[in-house]
Length: 283
Image 1 (cartoon, rainbow, N blue to C red):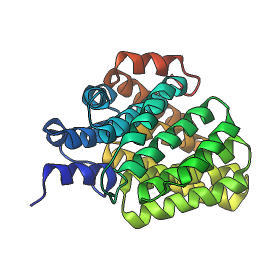
Image 2: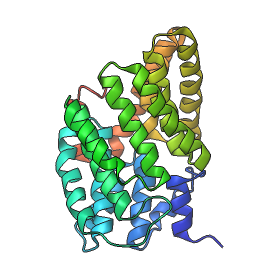
Image 3: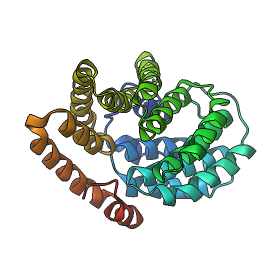
């Protein structure tokens, strides 16, 4: 019989993101509450996720505090708040340095927590145009890439840094590896985001065949965000789809607007403020 923790873990990192809403709501112990926050954040339920994360990141367990702080930082970045994420990722790094515990297949362990914090800081620097710092942090995180989840995230951030440096040729292999690892693992949410990162990298090459593949990847990912109710990925997928399919660009942009206006009420006040003021979020 599946435990609630195993159901939530499968939703967060496996092949069943679209679990019943009652499962996250019933999370009882700290690990369950962190997993529930991951699931809720993926759906764009940032306010509900923060309610679960705040006590965890202030708690006495360094591992859970690190994971919770890095998760909240990720949610801030998803709303365009890269600067706001920095102190959270810094706190995650401090907690992770004190964490102890056995290895975990999904990287919910000290090595995974360290990598989460370092990659979060890399993404924070990337979002503020600090590519050299981002590369140094990626290199530091690579020493802790002991789980499939860390390897996928390492591929995402590495590809995004290469794209920011206008080096699509370097971005594609990083994105390909992330997509392959996520697919092999059967991690639906990570596969969808990996498809979006790969689609962006392929499109940036400017070559017809890669752009055609990019369109197929992004269209499939966009459809999957609806199937699994992944609001955090739906609007970035819509923006990419608009760029890759000019004939449906207006429809996809209107969908992005609808997704964002549905997402904002589910965010906490600080998240809404960040999104409205961010140049990254087209509101």
